[in-house]
Every structure is written in C-alpha cells, then in structure tokens.
Amino acid sequence: MSDDATNDGQRFDRLPATAADREVAGRASRAAVIEWWVDRFGLPTDTFDDYTFWEKGAGKIWIFADDLPSPTDVEGLGMTFLRTRQEHWKPTTNAVQRFGREATRNVIELDAEAAGRFLAGENLEPEWDGDWGYLIVAHSIAGGVEPIGVGLYVHDELRSVIPKGRRASVSPPE
Amino acid sequence: MTPLERYESLVDDVEAFRAACDRPLPSVVRVNTIKATVERVREALDAEGVAHEPTDWHPGVLRLPEESPGSNWPHAHGWIHGQEEVSNLPAMVLDPQPGDRVWDACAAPGSKTTQLAALMDDRGLLVGNDNNLGRLSALRHNAERLGVTNLVVTNQDARNFSLKPLGEGQEDGIGAFDAALVDAPCSCEGTIRKNPDAFDTWSLDHVHSVAGVQKGILRRAIQATRPGGTVVYSTCTFAPEENEAVLDHVLEEEACRLVDFDAPLNGVPGVTEWDGEAYDPSVEQALRIYPHHNDTGGFFCAKLEVGE
Image 1 (cartoon, rainbow over the protein chains, first blue to last red):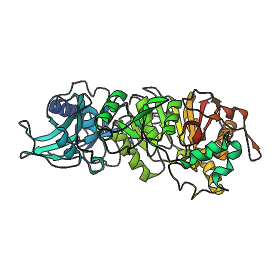
Image 2: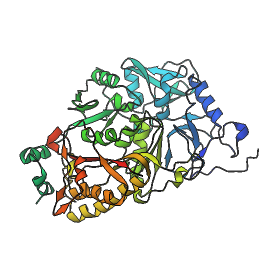
Image 3: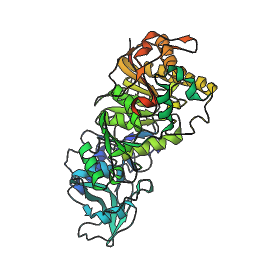
Image 4: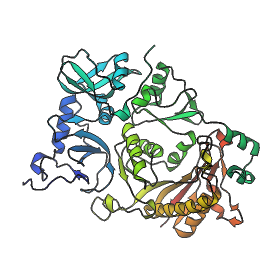
C-alpha cells in the first residue's frame, strides 16, 4: 500500500480500518483511534462499535453516529473527538464529557473548590501519582462522578485545557 | 399601527394579549437527555441553590425564575440548554425516532436541532443546515457542548438544498429524508417579550419578502422528504402571510396534506381568511399560539404529511 495520497483539509475522509488499509500518509486508523481511547481511559472495548471516524483538517478526528460515502464535503460531521498528527494525541473537551463517564483510569477527581477553579481555566497542583499527559478531569455531582474536561498533567501541575468558550465561573460551594 | 395591533382582530382576548406581550419572559432551559436525566439535573441545580420549576406541560423543560441559564454546573456539563419554552414545540411535533434521517433546514443556532438529536437518542442521521456561515459556528458549538454525534452540518441555501454532499445517488448515500423541520426565518413578531426591539425593523415589505423565502424552503423540504414522511413548519411570528399563506401555497404546489397533531400547549386553529385572501380550509389544522395562551412567546406550528 503506497502513501502517495495527501490529506485534503477541506473535506471529510473516513479513517482507514487499520494501518494496513492506509492510503493517506500520516492518517490515523480507526483501530488506532479506538485503541488509544480504550487503553488510555479503560473504556469498554465496544464503546465505539456503532460510530465512524473521519479526518478533516490536519489531524483533527471527528466521531459520527452514522455513516456517509467518503469523502464528504460538509461543514461538520458529528463531533470533534481527538487531535492526531502530533506526538501526544489529545482528546477534546466535548468528547471527554460525552464518552468519559465510563473511564476507569487516567481520571483525576477534584474536590468542589478545585473543580470550580479548573472550569474557570486555572492551573492546579493536585495530588496525583499516575501517568503524565492528558487526563480526564472529573468531579462528584448529583450522585455520580462526571467528567468536566481535559487536563494536561506535567511537572506536578494540572493545566486546564478547557477551551475559552467553555470556561465559566460557577458559584463556589457554600 | 404597531405590528401587534395588526392582529388584534384575530386574537380571542385582546387585553390579555397586550398584557402578555408587555411582560418579559422567564429564563427557561431544556434538559439535554443525551447527557443527563431530569432527576440528575434537578438534584444538581438544588445543590447549587439554583431555583427551578418544571413547566406544567413538560418535566424536562424547567423555568429558572432568578437565574440566567448559563452560570452553573449543569450548563457546564451540557446537561441543560437555554431554550424558550414555546420553541420546544416543533421538534416534539415532528417526533423523530432513533435511526431516522432528518433534515433541519434552518438550523442555527441549534436549539431545536439539538432537541431533535436528543429525541433521536443521538442515533440515525440529522442534517443541520443554515445559509449563514457565521451562525453555523453557534450551531456547532451548541451541538458539541450538548454531546451530539449524529449531526451533519451543511451551509446551503435551503431553497435549493442539494443532497449530493450527502452521497445522493451513491451506494449508502442519502436520497431522501424521513422527516424535515422548517423553522423558518421570519419577522419574529412573537419574540417581542424576549426582544423588545423586534419591531424596530418590522415592515410589511419585509413580511412579504420573507414569505417568499419561506415558501421556497418549505417546498424544498417537502420535495426532499420521502412519500409518507413528515414535515413540520414553524415560525415565531403572527403574520398570516408568513404562516397560513405559506401552507396554502405549498398545498397548491406540492404533493402534501396538513395533518392534525396533539399539542401539549394551548393555542387556536390556523386562520382561513386574512386581508381579503382565503386559504385552503385545512390550514385550520395548524396551531397559533399567542403569548397569553401559555405565558410564552408567540408561535405558529403546522404538521404536513408528504404524498406520492
């Protein structure tokens, strides 16, 4: 299989099933994307069975609940899911909120005060003995643990990577 | 004459109509069932001390009497979405099912689109189209915050909407929709409680020109929906030119008929005569909602079945 074709950033292309099916250089495969999410966060292996995965823009992977012929020239296809074509793949805030509830590892749970600061975009220094890299940041709310978004844990610091448009100030707990 | 005085001859209780139009609307949120249950949202709002009460017609539509809808944890999690009470109606009337293929012809900023996705359990295919590229970013932002994964966003003039980008004619492509929502651009007279300056740009010329656009979009929606499928037409305006006259036009031009529907909100039938014009009698099956009927904004909603 040659890698002659190049990525066209203006349209959606379905990801190849595996690396062996790849026709566009550098494009992540469906198997690798699912394996990354399932391995990193300990999700059930069948979590993404009913979804298709697409690339539009360099390395931006989208998750879609249905399927269409590929390539597809539309403005949006499902939800932005994962940033690839860089050394450390990075999940999106919205994907973590949508699919992270079932995560069993690389989840850091913050107390109420820290959760509010994280949502506002502040960097924190919480206790954490686990992996460095992108973590699911969660807190306890209404009887369950709920993902807030993505944090980058490096050098004993948890950096909030909540996008500006999703940051908010909620009232601190009384 | 203000735009509201223009419609007093149609209204059952003019005093109540005038009084309601002068009152501001409370903040209302819809529970996003893609990410949360009504019970969990209410528990979280209680824990934050955010006052809320369910509307008497829908447990998942909550009034927040003291609060803006966007500064609490349920909002941050995408569990709730600020959406005017009456604007919850058209997606419920369309009643899409998981697995359906649905077109929202005028989708931005996406309140009704994301409600359609929730009614579909985020399965099947939902196409959210808007001709305004700037407003599409609001649609995408809202859809992602609410966790929608079954949405295809397109940027076309709905009057000439092409299914080619959806693979029409190809294997596994989309040749027709099961259902469509036309929540049409309109003169917005019914939003006066929310937007006190809604009448500043009002003119009869604008009513007539936007009615032409509405006819074009509704015709295309009927053409793009399979025989037996459903199309819902809605506006947030009172002008019969933009409501019953649009229905009368498509009944004449396209294979379709109006059908009755059970509405959870009070209203009155569509009007069959206005300003010297007579409309097809079946437009009575449409629903006019005036602000005093349910203490909401004004609204118009009709359900059509597509013929062969």
